[in-house]
Structures are given as structure tokens and as C-alpha cells.
Length: 491
Image 1: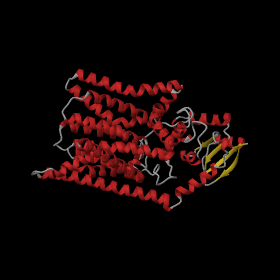
Image 2: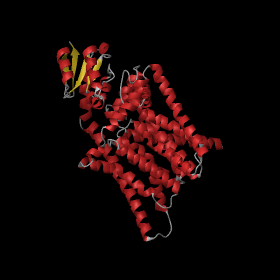
Image 3: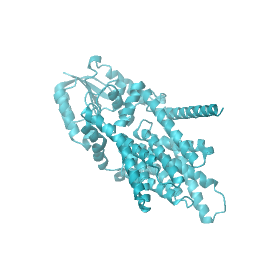
Image 4: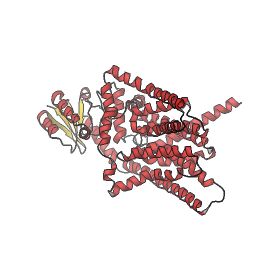
């Protein structure tokens, strides 16, 4: 009988997780949601295009390029192989189910299992804005961050030294996130740094060495096979360049701080940083243990430093979702706290609770706005469908036998997906933008046009480069054009 009850419980749990993940992503992951089948945009479209190329047999970083880690592209390749855009959406649902299951376990860990539904809902309200319509590197990083945080909190609550097996999982988590997007590992690195400081303070040298060794082993379990794979492929240098070196150059150029005094940037950053600033006040509450407060504040400080060094894109803040969940749980604990408080204590508690409610209210408004904007752009205007129809029609002019000999200049990745084609050269998008980071990219692109001369070129309307324009006038003739791009054929 107990076995039957257990099976029934697990069936209901999995069903609930699946339905919740499906409904949430249908609404808030418009760039992959079946409700918006022609909606391809921005980074999501890049990852799908690269994933499609890899699934089709192209060699990552040699035949097709983008500056993210291979695990992200392998996830998208699997999704595109399973069922194209819908296959990617299916994988997103699996990752979201893992997020929801781990949120539930963290809530239960704090003894608030009865409040799980609204606490998870509140966290998902926050997530909707940085989710940025889905299929981004941070989204695939979240389950690993949640898992490591859950294990860390278990040790912390039990007053343990770090469990040796957990240190291995931290290492695996860091290794995986290094090969998705290295910045996404900052929370797990903060957990490791906390134990490093604690064990050094307590002079537990042997425990420190054991955990450090097993953690490094976890990182190597991920790193070695990936590096060996690319070494066998003859593209280890290209992988390391795209995953790490290019991103170091990219990150070092500037940050949003250079434009912070602009009113629009300042308002945007206030919205994004507001939950983290509120978390600082919640985590500083006196009733929480020294270890817990130190750990949470360390996570917050390192995350905020990482975000300050970035460009301030919404989706960078997605990895803060576990922090928001903890803040919601602790906010509830503050709310239900009983006993007589001094006036100053009562005012501080009221400030924290009011601030938390304001944060959730702002993000609820933003989440409703996201749904409105996506429905408006897709169903109430022709913003999306007109571009899709015209680009698709233009790409249909390319004969089937030539579809492996097509290259774009400055066109967005979504045009390849719309036209059901792939670039014949690795730098098929963002040539000008990438060349601002590495000028050799444009030089190599122009050299390819001169020497290899693809049969067809798709050029974004308004794109301008002296060298490319010269090649177009000498070697190509215009075959078609619309409001979005022009199609050129080799003379």
C-alpha cells in the first residue's frame, strides 16, 4: 500500500511539475513557445542556428561560430535534432521542471513546505523578466545552481563541515557552467569560497585539502572529456578561443557603468538591481545565524560585482533567481514571526517586508507587460509575421542545390532559421560587432568572400562596409530585395 501511495505521489508530482513548466514557458518563452511559432529573436535564434548546424554535421567553432561554451550548443543541437524549435522548447520544459523540483526541496528544507505554491509562484514572477523570452545560457545553468545551493544549505543547517560528495558536485557544476557561460558559475564559486574561508578560519587543513581535491576532480570530470573531444576533432584551440579568450576581450571593452547616467539606463538598472538590494536588507536580519548571513552576503556581493562588470542585459540577472527564492522564504519567516518587538525592530521588519512586496509588485507588472508585448507584436500587428513572410519568400529564391553555398552579411541569425538555410562559413552573423572585439574576424570574412565567393549572399538592408560593398559590385548581381535584406547571386 505504501509503495502504491509513493508511486501515486511521484506521478502527481511529476505531472504537476510538467504542467507548471509547460504553462509558464508557453507564456514567457515566446522565442521558442509553440504559441508563437514564427517568433525567432536575438541570442535564442543564434543558439538555435548554431545548434541546427551542429545537428546537421557542421563542426562547432570551425564551420559555425559563436562565443558561448559547447554545452549550450549541444543542448540546442539536441533540441533541433529532436524537433526543431519545438524540440528546444521540450528541453526547456525539462530544465524548468528541474528548477521547480529543486525550489520545492529548498522550501521544504526551511520548513515551509505548506507555503511552496505561492513561494514558487513569487519566484517565477521575478524570473519572467530576466528570462527574456527564453532559450538562453542562464536558463540552462539554473538547475545546477539550484542543486549546489540546496546541498550547501543542507550542510549549513546541519552545522556540518562540507560533505565530500557535495564538493564533487560543486566541481561538476562549475565545470558544466564554464562550458555554458563561465560567468554563470559565480554563485557556486561563492559557495566554494565560503567553505574555503570557514575552513581556513577554523584551521581544518586536512578537511580543506580533501574537499579542494575532490572539487577539482569534479571540474576535471567535465573539462577533460570536452577538451579531449575537441582535440580529437582538431579544434581545441578554436573552442578555447570562442569559449574563454574571445569573451575575455568582449567583457573587457566596457560595462553598463559607462552609460549609467543616462536616464533610461539608470531606470533599467534600478529595476534589475532592486531585488538584490532588497535581499541585502533581508539577509542582514539579526535572527539568522552568522554562517548563513555570511554565505548569503558573499553570494550577493560576488554576483553584484559580476553584474556590475557586465553590459546590464536582462538575462544576466536570471542566475539571481535562487537568491530571490531564499529572500521570499525568509520574508515569510519575518512576516509570521511572533513576539513583542521594540519600535526600531518593528520598523526594520516592516521596511523589509514592504520592500519585498514592492519588488514582487513591480515584477508582476513587468511579467504582465511581457505577455502583452509578445501578443501585440505577434498577433495584433504584423511586426513579426511580415518580416517572417518576406525573408522566407526571399530565401525561397535560392535553388535547393545551392542551399549549402549561402552566406549572410550582418543578417540576424533568425533569417537563417526562417529561410531554412545555414551559413557556409563560420562567421555568418554579427561580422561588424564581432570585429569590434577581434578585427581579424572581418579580415577573414572579407578574405573568404574574395577567395571562396559563395554562390549566394544575403545582405541586411542598410549594412555597409567598404570592402564588402566592393566585392558585391565586382562579383555579384542583385537577385531580389525587400524591406529587410537583399539577395545577391554570383555573376
